[in-house]
Length: 168
Image (cartoon, rainbow, N blue to C red):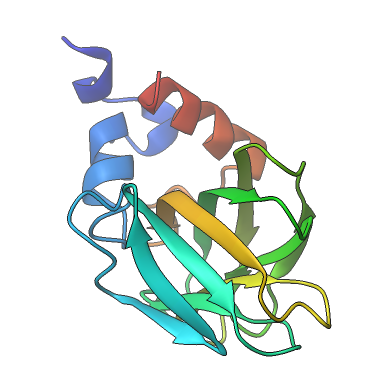
């Protein structure tokens, strides 16, 4: 059996494909077909080289969001972010996104788990006032409702490990 299709006990006997393909609430995580589903918040969005280009148009903490989260559930969010200008980003559930720091000039993988989310939007915002004109890029966007899949006992590190197995 292929490693992606083998049930894993710790994943509630789900396969890696069932968790990361079927369980992903983002329909096109690789932006193969465009940027459908994503919305701008004080920014402009564009489909560039199979990624989501976000250009901030205000001086606040802004970027892109997607309405996929289930209110009251727990979600694992992971994304690759590239920027040459701003090194801090908010990712995760709207209302309580986690601030993460990236290295500039290269792709960075970020992930968080949000518990009992209050809003249905997953957000990807820069975290710096005075950022008007900043452009950053998103790719490989995954929002997994780990509560609905029965794997909400897993830590972020465990989910990161399984993502690496999936994306080998």
